[in-house]
Amino acid sequence: MTSTVPALGTRTAEGSALQAVLLDMDGTLVDTEGFWWDAEVEVFAALGHSLDEAWRDIVVGGPMSRSAGFLIEATGADITLDELTVLLNDGFEDRIGRALPLMPGAARLLAELSAHEVPMALVSASHRRIIDRVLGSIGAHHFALTVAGDEVARTKPHPDPYLLAASGLGADPARCAVIEDTATGVAAAEAAGCRVVAVPSVAPIGPAAGRTVVPSLEHVDLSFLHGLMNTPAAHN
Image (spheres, rainbow, N blue to C red):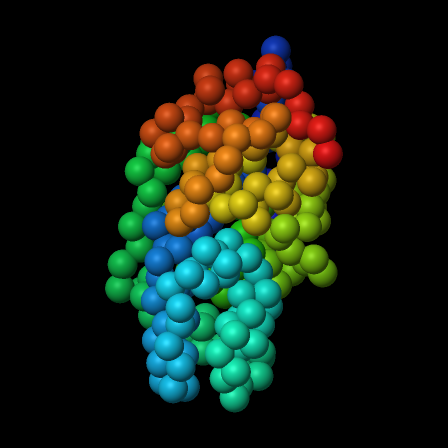
C-alpha cells in the first residue's frame, strides 16, 4: 500500500456521514478493461490457443492469479502462473503506453472531490507496477493512498483491500462510498461494509439493497455521494 496523506479532510466530514471515497481503477476511472482482454488474447495466441469470448466475463475485474489461472486451466496452455503474469502485465503496460482513455466523467469527479478535500483512495486488483504507470494519467495527487492487488494477502472479491484503504484513511468502512465497475469489486466493497456505486463496464451488475447502479460516472458527483449515505445499508 502506498500512502501520501492518510488523514481525513475535516470540511467534507462536517454535517455528512460521508468520510471517504474509495475508487477502483480499471474500467471505473480508466477505460482499460478491454486492454486486459486484448493482452490475454495476444499472449495465448502466441502460445497456440484461442480464447472463448464468453470467458471475458469470467476474468474481468478479478485478481491476476484468478484470471490467469482460469485461462491456463481452460486452454491447457503449457505455461506457469508466474510466467503468464509477467507476459500479461507486459502486454497491458505496452497498451497503456500508447493510449490511456479516462472513463466519461472521471476527470470531473476526481477534480470535484479534490476541490472539496474529500479523502480518496485508489483500490485496484492490478499490480503496483501497473497502478504507478496509470497514476501518471489519472493524477496521483488526488489520492491519499493507493492499494494494489499484489500488496494484500487476499484481493477482490475479498473485503481486505477496502478494509485496508478505509483503515489507512482513518475512516469507518460504513461511511465510505466505493465506486466499482465489476461484480467482483462490488462484492469486495459490500463485504467490507461500504456503500457501493456500481458503474458496470463489461458485464451487467444487478441492483441490490444498499447498492446504487448508474450507467456512467457522469451521473455521480459529491452531492450524489452525500445522498448515498442516507440510503438503507446492505445486509451482509
